[in-house]
Image (tube, rainbow, N blue to C red; front, side):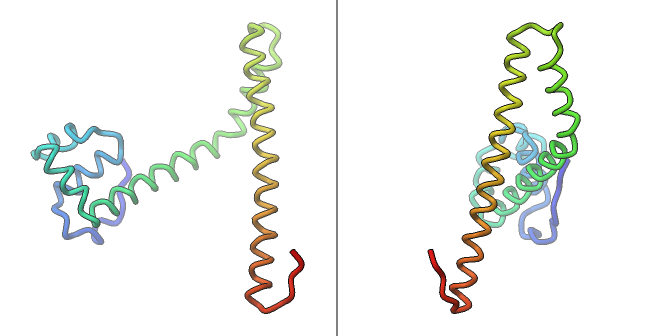
Amino acid sequence: MITTDINRYDAIPPHIVKALTLCANGSTWADAAAAVGVKAPCLRKWYRDSRAEEFIESLVRENINVASNMLTSAAPRLADELIQIALDPKNKAYARTSAISEAFKILRENVLEQDQRKQLQEIRNTLQAIEDGKSVDI
């Protein structure tokens, strides 16, 4: 279970912090509230508190970062598996076609993302030049 720096949220009772952490990690409001001995409406009321909202959002961001890191680490193995499925003549045609289509989709997205990163860098450079008082041709 992912947790964050609880000291910043010491105004939130510890049992509410625990319940919010359970929610951020996939529990329902009712299950999280029951786990700490409160009712779901009480927990939802706490969620509307800006400190609690900030706390749960930081937990969700952490979860997304962890998941992204896991996917990034597994990407070469996943790509290899996708290629094996696409090229294996023992697989059904629909499975191979789907794998081939997915492989080309991934390639297309990577090319688009690379182009977008290049364009963003050009925009940043132009903005920096404008801020530095240099003349810029747009």
